[in-house]
Length: 338
Image 1 (spheres, rainbow, N blue to C red):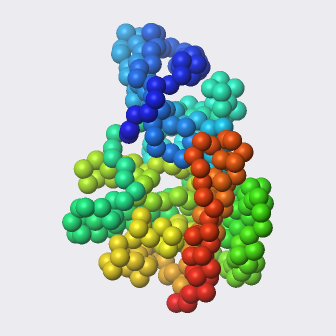
Image 2 (cartoon, rainbow, N blue to C red; image 1 turned 90 degrees about the horizontal axis):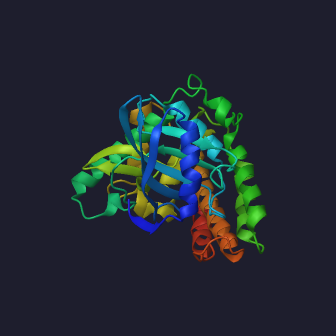
């Protein structure tokens, strides 16, 4: 991960006693090389090592602190992210091991969690980078297989309903209500096109066949690679129980095509066919179209959240309005669902 500016001293002053309280038997606890990384637009990510002795045995952990910023393009709860990662511990998924939680931010200034730091490379353009086509296609297939593994998690056995809640028989309407509420919170002016889309989504939502663990932001930019091996799936902050087509709709969102697809080789037809082979699920084209439209709507709301946060002074990065996303959204709404 790329290093940014050194951490302010006050963060170390908060972090050291917090970790000492979590590790009461640790002697000589020390923190090393605390720095903020440049990755992550919705959380503050601070990397560091912690070393100590316990009963004469030395210990050292590579850690990352994920802390809520003053404002963000995305509002999520560290308590839920922590609960999801705790529930996934010991599973076959390459999810980071989570260690500690400051749920209300009373110890670390803002709600935070501390989890293991996994070494690897992160590049959202992996599927359209400079590697040979055969390697990129192989990676695309392995990413989709990883998504199928996420959807295969036994969420009941792992207690995820207690962490995430159940979405009910029509999770599309549950998610639509969530993101419409976010739109109302952040919008500064009318967006008639989005009102048309909300109405269409509400009228055309169908019940899903399965309830699965949905990652919520599944993409190449949220995996770490070591060589050509996937070693971690990151950013579980938007995970929830819902329709498996939600993650597929996010992948097939035309505004994110360069990140998720390979033109002429790994597009909607290939992704759908392979997902059906991997999972045994038959994908209803109309239902998938609904989730693709929803993905565009969700992305427009996220951008508007960034605009509002910047104008309110909570972000130092300027965000342009979602006009280009809305154009794509309206085209997508009119397209054939076949």
